[in-house]
Amino acid sequence: MNESGMRIDVILDELVAEEAIRAASSARTAVLLAEATTLRLAESRSDQHGLAMRSLAAEISCATRLPEGTVIRFLNEAEILVNTLPATLEALTAGAISYRHAQVMASAAGSLPREARGAFERELLPVAASATAARFERTARHERERLHPETIETRTATAVAERSVELTPDADGMA
Image (tube, rainbow, N blue to C red; front, side, top):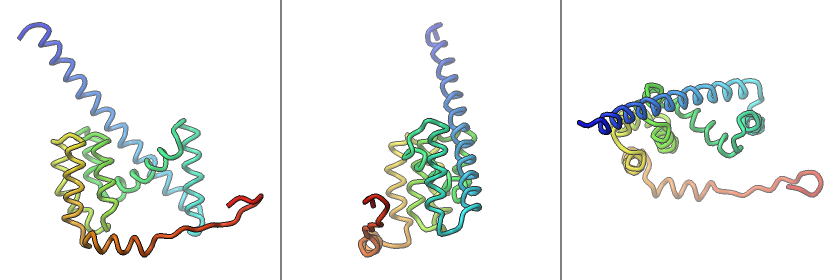
C-alpha cells in the first residue's frame, strides 16, 4: 500500500473514533434530558405535567440555543431510550450505533406497547449495528408492524375515534 492509501486508512480510523465519541456524547445527553424530565415531573402536579414539560423545553432551548421543537423531540427520544430501550442506550454509549440509529429505534419502539419494546429491541439492535440508518429505518418500520400486537386496521380505527380538536379561550381574545 502506498503512503496516500495508508494515510486514508488512518483518517478512516480517526473518523470512526470521532463518530463513537459523538454517539457517546449523544447518549450522555439523552441521560441528562431524561433526568431533567424526571425531576421536573416530580415537582409538578400530574394535571400540570404538560405545562411543566413545555417550561422545561423552553429552558433547555434557551440554554442550548436549540429550537424548542427540536428540544421537545430530544426529550421524547430520551425518555424512550433511557426508560424502555436500555440495550440501545448502551450500544449508543459504546459507539456501536449512531444517534440517528437510536432515534429510529426510539421512534419505532415508541409506537409499540411497552411490553412489546423489549422483543423489538432484541430483534433489531443487531441490524442497527450493521446497517445504514436509512436501511435500518425501513427494517424497523417493517418489524414494528410485524411485532405490533394490534393490526394496522385496529390502530387506525382507534386513532380516528380518539382524534379531536380543542379550543380553550384565553385572555385578550386569544385561544
